[in-house]
Length: 83
Image (cartoon, rainbow, N blue to C red; front, side):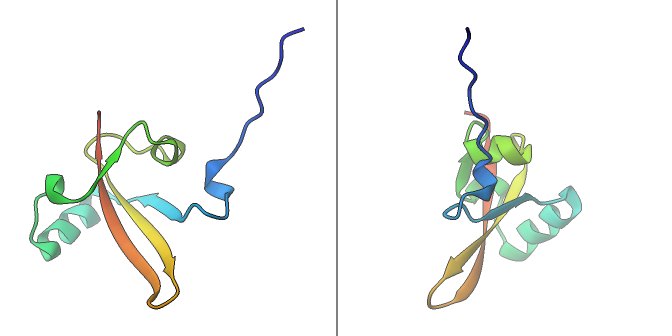
């Protein structure tokens, strides 16, 4: 009998912050406000388990909401790369 692999939703893990793909129009605005090129943002590989779970593709920008004991909630952005 074949052993079934258990499915695990990484997005529900308590240590994984909320991730979301930023819509293209909003991504352009964010890049303009930050005064950087998308490639200058920290990278997130398309093969990252969270990137795969949210459907992020190379060229997308991902918004991450992190909890901070001193700042409350911090929003960071990552540029999805294909390698």
